[in-house]
Image (tube, rainbow, N blue to C red; front, side):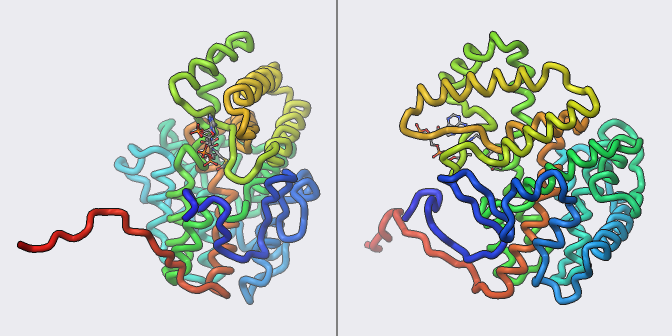
Length: 363
Ligand code: ACO
């Protein structure tokens, strides 16, 4: 048995490959570096879904269908009652998603892609005492999300920044939430069940819950000269540094650099975040140096969540909603994996080893 299933191959996939030693991510035969900067989220959905739905339209048709799905899903925000508003954002998004019917067809899949994109802005605004804003199906997915969150149109550079993020996180091998989604799909429970399971696995701080705490860490450190002492004290307490370390990557997570470039592009075009990136880089340098000194045998590098935090902050998402934004991208991967599992996989049902007490023999 491998603790945490490290190194265990549990599925064949044509969707993505995480090359841990080379620090490379391949999505359906395309390197992440080739995709970032000129690929819209709608195009990555088309790429991931190719071959998994018989009625998949072309890219333009898919973008239109996704716009219609956002408009349909908006009706569900009426269920956002006081109880749901009292939950954390990712729990509220999960609860709203769980109300959707199960199914395995393309329209279920598109509604599930629309769900975090529409529910997150509604939940964000509800927490500010504001009414939700209806989607504009004619906009790109990224531009519409930003508009629904803030109530005003996004610039082209901001929409490109969110596209870069959604494309970067759309799929990543057999990560914990994707594995959860595949296990659920293997029981033939349906795509909604698989996506709700994916959201549940994603929300943990060791997976998709890390970027919000990255902002807390940066805000708590406050100034570059305080970074070393803060980090040493956190590690002395036994805390983990959010945004560092990875199960598969032994070198720098390629998604970290992709998102850092996106932050830089956004900063240049909209003049936001003066000094923020340089400060984060100083904290990152200190963290890497200290982690290397403390764990010389384990290569602990920056992961995707560190620059996710800076990018989503620059796009004005509140830190407590960062995991919901992660779900907006990863949902495409969960659905593609669920369909792949259904197409060729058997029920996933490993075994456990019993290490409890032997049965008592009755006197
Ligand atoms: N800070 C401090 N120490 C760390 C960190 C970290 N970020 N990451 C790993 N370590 C240490 C562990 O304490 C452990 O030390 P030990 O052997 O003395 O007990 C050792 O490195 C190995 O840790 P594991 O938990 O076995 O490593 P694993 O591969 O299972 O963990 C994980 C990967 C969960 C991402 C881990 O690095 C972590 O907790 N990072 C912080 C949370 C985070 O950034 N999560 C987002 C990950 S990316 C994503 O899922 C999208």
